[in-house]
Image 1: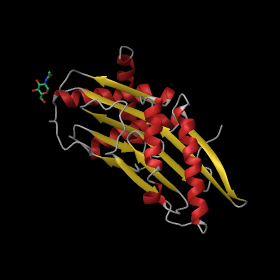
Image 2 (image 1 turned 90 degrees about the horizontal axis):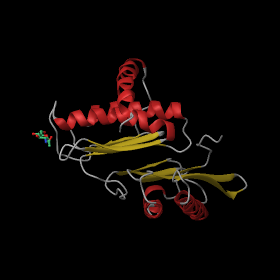
Image 3 (image 1 turned 180 degrees about the horizontal axis):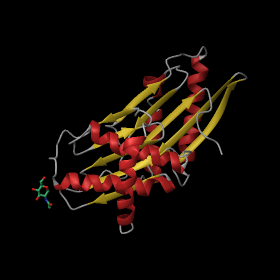
Image 4 (image 1 turned 180 degrees about the vertical axis):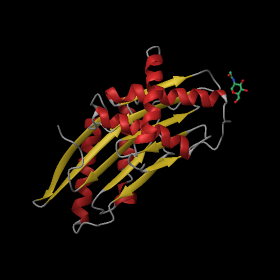
Length: 243
Ligand SMILES: *[C@@H]1O[C@H](CO)[C@@H](O)[C@H](O)[C@H]1NC(C)=O
């Protein structure tokens, strides 16, 4: 983290400014994933605060940042990931929102994760890099149902499974695509993994959550399974920014 000192002081200024001026999007969900607490002013809190500054600098330019800060047992380990199609400026806003909001929602928890449409931010006092996260996981779906559930479910699974293969072989572990069900119905899909994951673990993570389609989103017009390590989304409209 040698280049982060300048970045951190810049961050503190910008951060304070943004806190007062920006009211960002609401998070989709969060987990205060460890019930273990740290104390105000403790070495862990110091590391965590520095770490948020580090992520805010590291993540936006490439859409992904991760790091380890401090020494065990007060080490902070974490990452921030923006959705693969999100512009740097929006990634920035999202990671700043996420780092502020996660501290408000899980003020003294030693591990937490927060999710937005545009990004996720996760930290812990334990190393979780490269592991499938089955604990921090939730479903979202469009409450409307389709009229042709059998074909629709089959095509949705087909599309997402293709996109899992594509994500595995993409540098950003991210893929988008679409599949026509019938003339008036096209499914748009997205798959993504956190980028510290080995490609084959990413694929396994995606196949796992795609297997949950029947419980999360059976016949629903749109759906998402979102975990701390991978996620998918499908809708009957284009929801990514194609450039
Ligand atoms: C870790 O933090 C605790 C307080 O939370 C402190 O007592 C301990 O000395 C710290 N350990 C190290 C190695 O910094």
